Length: 280
Image 1: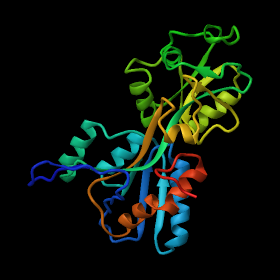
Image 2: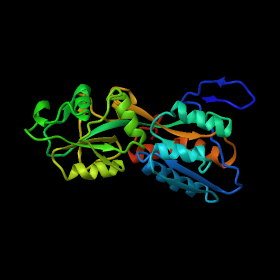
Image 3: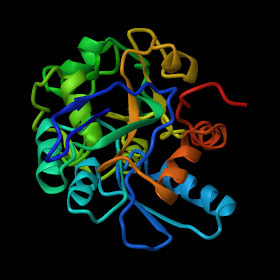
Image 4: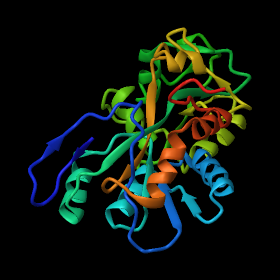
């Protein structure tokens, strides 16, 4: 965890995933918690909100998507209590938080995910090397025949630039290279899944909790399963985050503590992502 105040020098400390952290409540005196951010996490955030309100009926939890960048912007403006994010905070975002609030922000690992490579169920290509994935999404490979499939054009589907998934994929899979200009931008993961289900030549990417009706490729021979993700065998793993302005108290702290508890982590598994620890 890294935080800074306007009057105190920079303080560095490490928060492991086994230390259940805290969040930053808005001081509006209400019994409402507001989350916004990652579209990848929207179904999970909704589930956490629904289940938490069952055990804490006096608290209202509202969750919304819009993309990681949108959530971070709302957090900087003080409009929400928690930003849900599928990537780490950028240095510029932390700087803006510090300038406005006196803190660089506090991050919490709340689940583990993998970026799955989606293809149509009729596509015979079910294994791609990481290098082939990179060449497909940068536009160097444009025909399925090149990677052992049919002689057909590859139709690319991409997440919008405000998406943390878009940024993470570009940084970690494309190694910073630009996406192919032929890629079609979609507003969310489910939109990509729907488009691929209708196009046998299509390919896209997104979280492992999506796309039960399409095929998930192996990457370098490794399938994106819970076991492979948990043990870091699958090559495109990532954590999912909560971000708050500063350390919390009150109901926001209680909510994050619950999310990180066994009950909250069970919901991670039910949705299809990978909990931070083994849960029954």
